[in-house]
Length: 108
Image 1 (cartoon, rainbow, N blue to C red):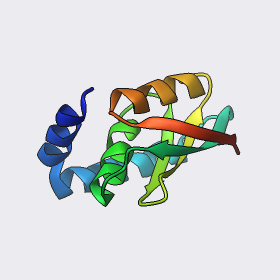
Image 2 (tube, rainbow, N blue to C red):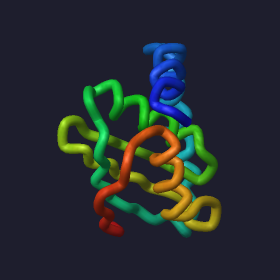
Image 3 (spheres, helix red, strand yellow):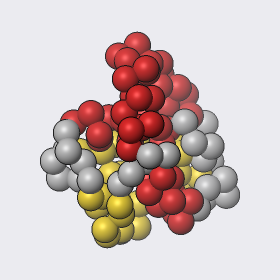
Image 4 (cartoon, rainbow, N blue to C red):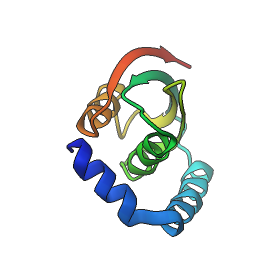
């Protein structure tokens, strides 16, 4: 996904979409699998808080992502995921598709 498309999607989602995504995330977290893992990524390319919120919103839509929390301007992204459904490499690829670059990672 190109950066322009990323911004278009986030603009279309709006605040109501973010609230719905938060509710869906809470439900997914309740049903978290035994194979849940966490990773903290340092991401380059955030130019504003909307980038962090948008990345969270789009990652949460991916199968296997249980939770995601990004910070701006630090560029820290904490992801909890079901390792049987999505790999760390897939998460990094998804972040790259959204126009950002993973600089560093730490498994949690």
